[in-house]
Image (spheres, rainbow, N blue to C red):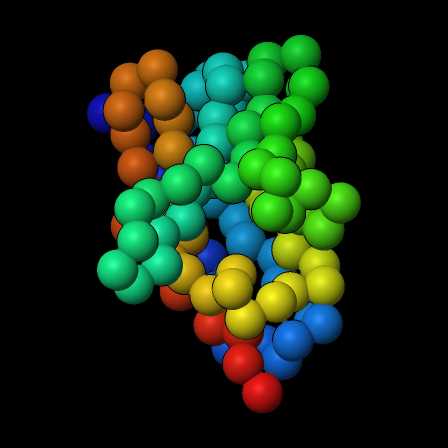
Length: 113
C-alpha cells in the first residue's frame, strides 16, 4: 500500500520559513488530490492546504498568502512551503491522501522565540 513519509519539521523563530516534504511511495498517487493538515495541542485537526490533479490549490484562510503547496514529480513529493511563520502555526503537520485515507506520521513545527 502507499506510504507517506514526512520530513522538514523543526523549530523556527516568528517570521521565519520552513519547507515540509511528503515522500509518496507509489508515485502515481501524487497526481491525485493531496493535502496537508495540522493539529495543535488541545485542538482538532484542520485542513491547511490541498492540491488537485490539475494543480489548482486551496488554502485555509489563516495561511493564505503565507503557505504554498506544490508537487515535485521528479522526487515524488508533495511539499508545503511555509513563510512568515507565526506562533499560532505551531502544530504537528500531516500529509494526507484523501481518496484512500492515507496519512503521514506527522512532522512537528514549532514557531517560538
